[in-house]
Length: 66
Image (cartoon, rainbow, N blue to C red; front, top):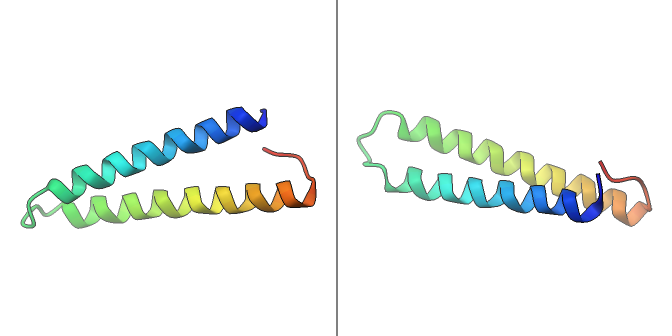
C-alpha cells in the first residue's frame, strides 16, 4: 500500500469517526445507548491515533509503511 493511499484511508476513517461523534452528541442525554456509543467512538479515535503514531515513527525511521 502506498503512502498516499494509507494517508487517504486514515483521513477517511477520521471523517467517519468525527461524523459518528457528532451523531452521538446529538442524541438525547436520556438515551441509554449514548454512553456505549460514545465509548466506541473514543476507542476508534484512539486506534486511529495509534496507527498514525506508528506510521509517523516508521516514516521517521525510514521503515516500510503498512
